[in-house]
Image (tube, rainbow, N blue to C red):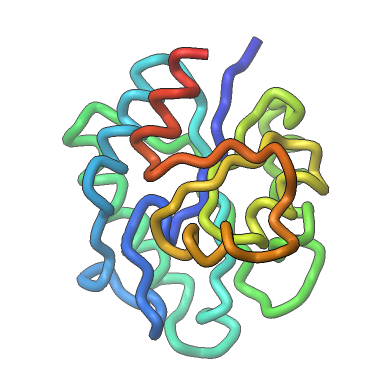
Length: 176
């Protein structure tokens, strides 16, 4: 059985910016997040990133900039003994692959063979939780990024596990 975790990027792995993370120099990991991903990798979990990237559609940066951001993240992660098995993103403002729609998660499952019903999707926004529910994945919320605002929303799904940060969410997953 392949064990996997899907993780939203902005607000979960790295700090959010109101003007978007548009270049590698603006990308800064949240304390402990890369170490948490490294622990997943070392425990033989497949790790996938699923991120809306509307700033591409808005013309604020392009695919090359996004790849440079991801290379920086991978470089820092590899130094800790971790890896990411795939980056998935939606560069559009609307569509089946844009969260809260389930398309991105369904695409990950179809390309990799993971079972979404056994796969946590860790995010910080209502869109992340809704995408997880609609795709049949296990929604997990962190309080970093937009997590505190998400907790206060009346549409917040029931029975979602909530953790202060990615490190604590991963610790829970590894001990289940």
